[in-house]
Image 1 (tube, helix red, strand yellow):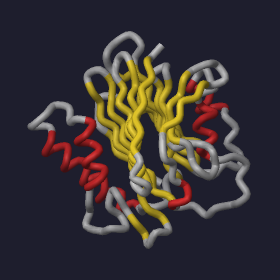
Image 2: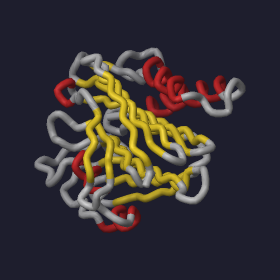
Image 3: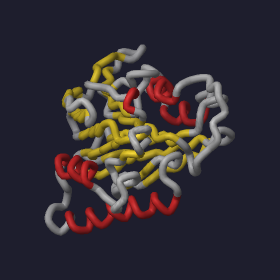
Image 4: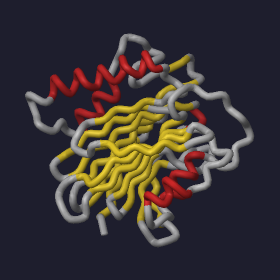
Length: 247
């Protein structure tokens, strides 16, 4: 997995995530759970490993995962902990920076972890952080919260394909922005359903002979008061939508 776009809004952001996986890993709905500290989380649960690939909280924090760091890696099984459970572990930490620097990543498969935090005092996003773990080293980068961003999984998409896929996103934005300063959440869903480089194995909704395919689209829309999560199960046709109010 996967394909992720981030779009800032005056009062928050829209995060949209296509999950590319084996069909057996598909979820059907959004669950609501509390962390050990009583913070409400919304997330779709992985049907196999029990973790997740995207979650948002009642504190205005959202995090998501992509498989791989920079390039396709050789797997070195067994791994100590699922990356999807690692993402849920994140929300048990009081300090995101402590998690980024101190969480034990030994024998965890390479990943890209994306973190989004809205401001608690003003109507704009406070930070966008990218953590990449290549199996030996962690690489932490702060990105502009006022700029759109695009990511796709290094394990599925080689660099040349990543560039072509991101260009689809940039071209779409250039077409949209003269019409609307902030494209709508539904227009982002439509892009994630239809974005194409002319190759079914590498389009935004992709399929590689049924072994790996886009199984779902999850979107988080965050504003000053709440977060809304929308989940589309592309295989089963299920739809789910839930909301959490920021504390």
